[in-house]
Structure formats: C-alpha cells, structure tokens
Length: 266
Image 1 (tube, rainbow, N blue to C red):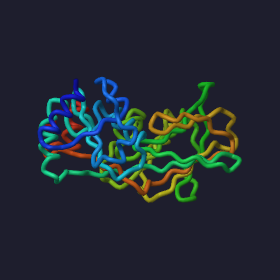
Image 2 (cartoon, rainbow, N blue to C red; image 1 turned 120 degrees about the vertical axis):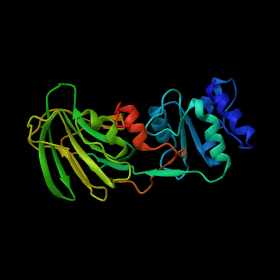
Image 3 (tube, helix red, strand yellow; image 1 turned 180 degrees about the horizontal axis):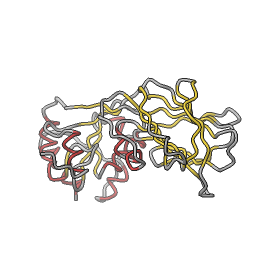
Image 4 (cartoon, helix red, strand yellow; image 1 turned 60 degrees about the vertical axis):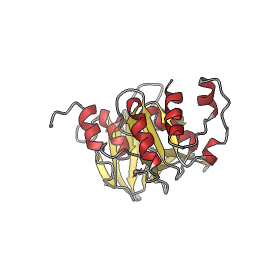
C-alpha cells in the first residue's frame, strides 16, 4: 500500500512520520487528530484533487505540502508513487525545494450583511442554479463596473486554477507565477464576452444583476455550493497566505503542462 511504502521510505532516512486518523485506519492503525500541529511537512497521497482536499482540511498554513500522485504526475504533486525514494532523499537533505502558489480569499456577504469567508486555490464560481436558465451577473474590479454578464456562470481563477475549470470554459493558461487572476465567463450569451486577466492585487466583486431573477449558485474549488440571494456580494481578493508546495528538482510546471495536454514540442 502506498501509505506504507512512503512511510518506510521516510523512516529509512531518519524522517519521523505521523498519520492522520483516516489514513491510519487504512492500515489498521490509530492516527493523531492533531497531526498538523506536529508536522513540518504534510504529504498528500493521491492526485491533484486529493492535494486540494488536503489543503482545505488543514486551511491556510505555512506548512509545505508534498503531493505523491498515484499514477501520472499532476500539476500540483511533487512526484509519482514510483519516485517516492527520490522525494525521501530530497527531504532528507533538509533543504526542501519549495514553490509558492497564490490563493484566493473569498468573502460571501449575504443580503442581511452576514459574511462567510472561504479559501480557494483554483477558483470561485457563480453559476446557474436549478432552472438551467442563463444567469445575469454584475462584475466589478476595484469598485469599477467591468460588465453585466448573461451566461451559464462566471469564474475567477488563480494561475493554478487556469488549468482547471477556467481552461475548460475557454480561458487562457497562466504561468504559475504570473501574478494575475483571470475572469472567465461560462458559455456567455454574447460572443464578445471574453476572459479578462487582472492583477492579483485587484479586488473583484461579483453579484446577481438587479434585473436577473434566476437562482445563482456559488462554489469554491468545486466545494461549498451555496445559493446566492438577490442582494448578496461575492468579494474575491488575494489571500495573504500562499500555498507552499514541494517540487522535486528537475520537475517543472511546463514539463507537466506538455505531458498533460499532449503537446509535442520536444
């Protein structure tokens, strides 16, 4: 089992491990409910989705995460399960190769003024609800009106998220350290509505258009799906905490991009 292989590889190099409860139960052990408080590094076993779930479980933190992908290398993971010993050797040096990815602070303010705060690595999405009809949305950037959208929805994505839902909706790919966010409409009614790239210091506000009547759903990283009421506002800005990822030397974002998108440029 991958959990045991990774732990044995780390222990051989003198690296102590702590298992969280759900992972420990897979191998018949009892985990530590407070494992993140004792960890200098968190290892996620799975794909990019598992690493995303790990991030949301531990919340904003300066603790680095290393993803071990059970299969092919992902955009966020450090290595595949066949490269576990390489990861262990790298960690044993004590000089971890850490890259940082911008995240989103997402505030959903209800019409009564009650605020809810969320963390997003990939994107925040406002989308059509139960009726299946197009929704009417207003978007503002730094307080200035950007556009009134009539579409299936609207995505605000980080460079990390530009390879996820935003890309599927026709948005541009962004380099991981571009220092920008992208606003991408989903199937807009007007063909002139295109993605817009804005600086990551911008504050983006999304809300139902005053003339719209359709139900609108709100989602962060494909989670926390809530219904947006008429006078609600979703405010998106850069989170003060970045995600700190372990990268093995020799593995680059652009290499992964070529493999994932089946580019053949050499």
